[in-house]
Length: 168
Image (cartoon, rainbow, N blue to C red):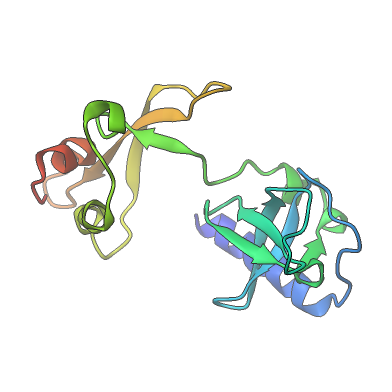
């Protein structure tokens, strides 16, 4: 993640120096989009080719997975920075946690989201992911998340702990 952070810092600096916005947005093209919460540019793609009534476009930040609204003036072309910027695989992928889907009788709420964040912990530890079913055209990948205890090196399955409702 350190390499990605350094890389995106360089992209952000380029975008802040470049006043030229996008004149016509293309669906599926990778841009740098301003995230208004922290005034930083991140890689993004349009989720719809048509602007909203406000004139903004809905974009998805491909390295984080969140969506945002952006005016064309807040989008920057990153083609001139080289193929690496647009060809780097997206760091956020849609997935579902194994045994934690509506089909399993599990329903996400603010409480479950808070429990997930508590299980992961405040220090943003590295998590291990195991794909138990790959993505298809009609469904997201199914995964299990694991957290390693720094002292014992023991792996704990976050999916199992969430399903039990117990803290790590």
